[in-house]
Length: 460
Image (tube, rainbow, N blue to C red):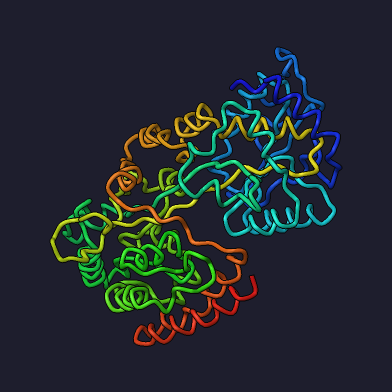
């Protein structure tokens, strides 16, 4: 990780003169997470990577704080950070904050408190922070860094974190969707395991069989609630040729005829094999699956470690996401297997005390070398193209090739987003509930959702 380049240092000196502090701190690190599973601070935070005495640091800070929201990624990211510490002499403290508290704390920091130096940015929130001038403009830093070339990352991810022609976060990762199933349930009821040859009709048929045979045990074939967008019904919409949002981000696609076709098929063919909406609202489908009450479901690659470390992990397996046999050929033809994908970004607070140090840490995570390490350590799949293969071999005994295979034989659709993504996605949580309860209302509910969504888009 060659971070000490003369050009970069000259850029740092020039930019440090022009940047003023707005709450970022090189010695902060008190925003520890809460919750037994989702929050915490790295065990190595007091002295990560050693003392740094072996490095002749050219930075003006001794420590950087980093905020993330996924405890499953902490250990691997800390190892990468520790390696950077050995080179830079700058310690790295990684705090894990629960998802809801993460954005509350970040917004508070942006409003006059302390922001972390480096932190994750999400597609749903990025535009708000970029447009508010709270993130470091990375253009000059990227230009001076020989290891960062935005063309090397998956299409669309860098653009998520671009505003008015400038870059405000580096691509951290990307994800795809696969079919997760419980082999013990399929074995118990004598049903063949899912395969990469399955289309959606195969999925529906197996879900119905599990539901019928498991009725006495309270077992359902599948689960998916209104919140399961990227790892649920969004994939059906795009697989059936519909869309959620127009390419210009001005119009909802919920009233698109192919969208309605997909949602009606979901209601008619899949809903009868799911727990009630009330049950899935009270108990997350992930927990229903881990409790042995659901036979299979769609899930994203970011959740692999959760299921790998679960009590019954040996029963869990993955297959490629089913395809929609649009032409009736009986085989998966081009464009018929669709997976949504997304990617986080590594952002830097505009008011960080040492912009060059903070950028260099983000760049260490996002360089080709850092992205390969991320995959090797099982953190997540890489945003850098061609660097994710190692990820599939990290979790011994669990075959993760379906997540990579869909990139080769499927169609990846970038998670739709706009300025107020959280508003219209949040609207789905309640507006679609009537259709989940009364499937015959799906078409009307989708059209009403489009109307509400268009009102939100008109304000952007």
